[in-house]
Length: 252
Image (cartoon, rainbow, N blue to C red; front, side, top):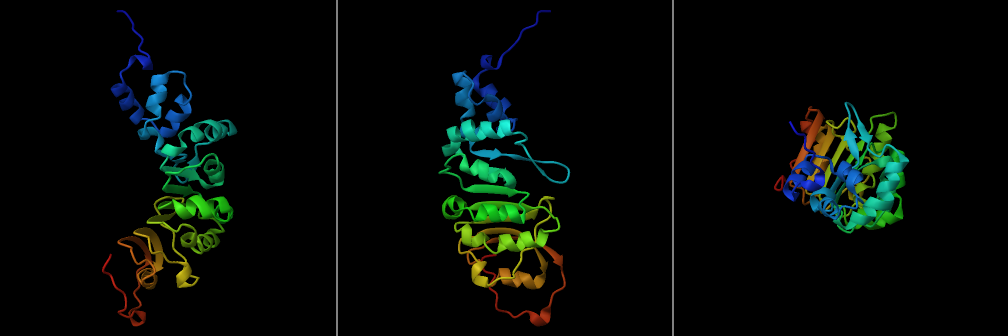
């Protein structure tokens, strides 16, 4: 029986698209970006493979950074991202390297951002960077995912993030705030004035709260456009003597 060898370039575009759709966009870009084959290069520049790039992967108990070496990091920052930056709409980043990725290019169409394993120190470094806080965070990001590691500084991290998130991300419509264990939402902190923790644009909120009373803070008008609320309630004890019938639930 005669053996025949089929190369990628021998396959029609339709078959190549089927194959590439089964692969991770990160791997496709890392493996094929810059190839001399014009047809392959055209296909991997399709929005299917450039609009949403995930730089993290989920292990059994935490998120891992796919940028495992400086060689891979530099390839993305110096070659790949500048070439496709106008096509990128969603980025999922391990927070310790978020600055590297966000500074690698301008992303005029980026609206979704995932920041994973976000410690208090990393959050402070990112959120105080004026290039981001007065630029892409403030003017573009409408969808945000933040995960935090549950370590000894857990509560400090939560307070730090909660105290500034809505003053920085002015256009936020969707927020998911969870532990880096992924399935557990993070308890929001309300140790600051209502005006500093409010949003007139937020539509969807996924969070954890310590007890029912804090639900009233969320529904007291500080999120005037909120229509979808997913809550993980830690303590279901209802303080009926403290609850006044002053909350409107029209949008929920």
